[in-house]
Image 1: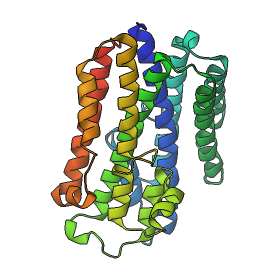
Image 2: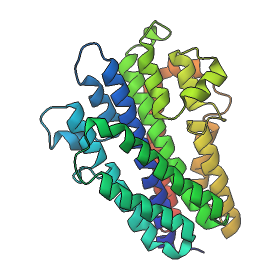
Image 3: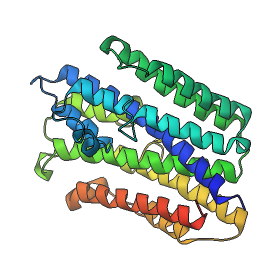
Image 4: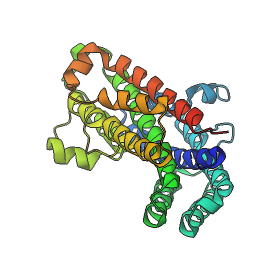
Amino acid sequence: MMLGRTANGLFWMFRYIERAENTARLIDAGVRMSLTASNGSDDEWVSVLKSAGAEDAYRQHHETVTGPDAIDFLLRDTANPSSVMSVIDSARNNARMVRTALTREAWESTNECWIEMKHRLSRRVRDTDLPGVLDMIKQRTGLIRGAFHGTMLRNEIFNFSRIGTFIERADNTARILDVKYYLLLPAVTYVGSSLDNVQWVSILRSVSAHRSYGWVYESDLNPVNIADFLILNGRMPRSLAYCHEKISNNLGYLAAEYSERHPAHDTALEILESFRNRDIRAIIDAGLHQFLEDFITRNARLGNEIAQAYRFY
């Protein structure tokens, strides 16, 4: 069996890489919404910080929420353990720890990403440079994923890395949908009403789903369809259902590899089953916020159970 320390390093290396890309996409969505905001306030940046799970940490260091300060906090502030620079630093440290488990291409793409981040995020990013910096983050994290996919053996190293990726991705999608939906639709009676399409487009852009949503729903932007797409659509690679299908598959490969099952396997299957044969309107009527809160809690518990099962220490 692989050493728990190595499994832990791979799991968290890819969680951190995924988090860096997700944060860049959140900032991009926040910028787009702030440019179209009619009231000129920075309210949207509060929801961006909430989506990133960074609002409390931000308010410990700033009295008010402003766009420039929120962007800097999410991109490069070392006081924020989930800033892009912080998580890329952590990803590289984990990659160094498991260096012998990675191909040369996977390691070099991670190291080169870290080097460029250190250079581009060494000082506060100017407004004119921000689009290029966000694109660089998305491209560099994509290169790591591409190098990994193209060169790694499909074994337990691959499985732990993929599980980490999809645990993080599912958490991110649920948080974005919960925060945006909860802010924009404070009551079920608002579902289907005429709301600003820019807000809904921002949700889709922040999870790289704008174009693919249009292919499925023919650009009919409405909150019910968006929730359906991001929760139940098994073909959308950032939906909750898709992420947990991949998590269950990879846990299944580990069970076969090691000839043993753990409570984590049952938890993963229970979460996956919660998406099957479900109707999005029934979920919304029962309370979408409660559904997503429960999912975030169960997703986090699954991560902890995996850590215990495979001795991540």
